[in-house]
Length: 299
Image (tube, rainbow, N blue to C red; front, top):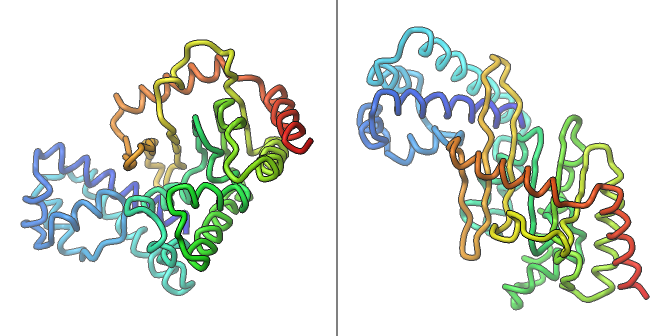
């Protein structure tokens, strides 16, 4: 459930803030609560953990938490526990992606949890179509680039995961803003037929009220996108307690991916997004270009 993901993350952020304020290490907090360092890390990352209320109170005592913050932490904890009960009854506590964890990178489940909780996402892609907009044939071609020997069964399971992720676009209130380099349109994974279908699909998706797609043309000159790899900035709703949740950036790398949550890092990505917005084509001009290139491929 999205609410549970948001609540866990709000709770985890608060607990990290309290630990940092008390100048305590993950290891020391784990020793005090009689759990592992990784358990504290998972809790602060907003993941499901096996911690009792008694252990949580011991941590709050160890941090010297003021009464107002203590009450907030315990209130959020009760919210997390209640929603976890509902999830167990509905059989959704593991998330739809859990059955595909053998098919994805180790840190990608964290991205999927955040994606399912986000109320808006802004992504920049310099080389390929954003995941939420990929057609099955295009996704298949991308997978086969790095894993040409993947079994037919595993390939289909990965395609299923992509299709499940795309249902996020149908959720009320969710917004996707995508900046893509013109290079994305010109690369041809899967060949011209696949690209014609893919670009038409992206163009049609851009007609949706919840989706904005803008192309950064080759003629844009110097811009921040030329020196950055792909990234996605995710923003989240506040909790039922009104607790604000900071955004997170998922930055993609050639050999791995990282998450950025510190304000200084987030500012760098906000500045990059603002710069991309000044050089990208309008939504209408981008849609025209997408259809024009798709027509070239289909000729």
